[in-house]
Image (cartoon, rainbow, N blue to C red; front, side):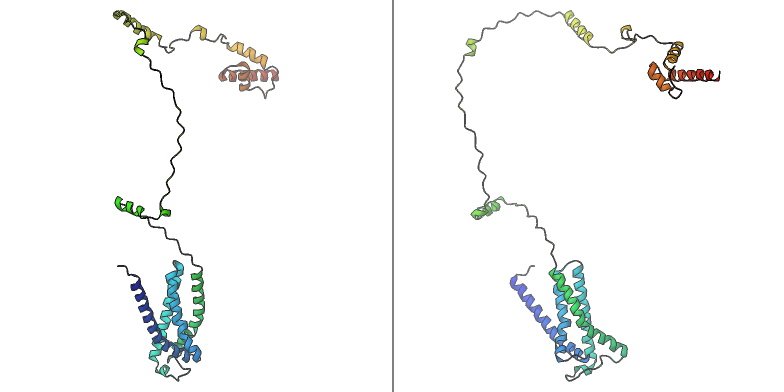
Amino acid sequence: MNLNRKGRTALVLALVAVVGMAFRVSWNALRDIANAVGADDTAATLYPFVVDGLMALALVAALVLDGKDRKFALRVLGAYTLASLVLNYVHGLVPELHDATAGWGRLAAGEYANWALVLLATSLPVGSIYFGSDLVAKVLHHRPVPVPDPIPAPITNAEESTETIGYRSTPDLLESTPPPALPAAVRVPDPVAVDVLKSAPELKPMPTAPIPVNSIVRSAVAAESVRPRRATGRVPAAARPTRSRRTPDQLLHEARKVTAGWPDAKLTAEGIRLELHTSPVNARMLRDTLKAERAATAVI
């Protein structure tokens, strides 16, 4: 159940009252501890504000910050709360600290325990300066993450939505878009009535004669014969190449004429094939024959 404004205000005031009374109880113990470690009257009076005041500051910072900064503020709050608890506990165990006129004294019977408690009591003001400044800087440089607006729920009642729009002020109402301008109407002259039946010539029926079945069959066969057929069988003589096929002796004779002035490096099968327009097999055969002839001529 959500509290109204008055309930929240009363809750905050009650919390402030409880914290104030708790601070007054802790203030007495921390003041006596400060006197015991050598602080004067003014410093002893301000000492509780250093410890318990930083606790309040860390609590406010934890409510404002988020992420790692919030964890840091909670750790500072926990550390100073524990330190204040230890000092209040020591104040209850040492009766000499309760005397109003007591000055500098020991916080514990043992040497090491006394040293540890004196170190704790004297380091809290320095820690308040460091941690308090850091928390204030984090709060001042904090940029809250914007929360996205919630998606409005769909309107289920059409009557309620109509009444809501009707109660809006004039600036909130949606502006109506003026209708587009229509082009000017062009007057078309009235059509002249024409008597179609009287003006059209009288149509006479054409005499129809029965179509013989044989003519239908012949037209179907002729339509099928017009369709193009694929070329099958031998190629006609007109489509064959006119150049006659050369014999190996003729190819060799032509190769000798073409390659007579060629050097040995140029005598290749590809070059012979391009010059004689023959197949790669014939070109290789001619190359080998010509090279053999040149080798035999060189030996002689």
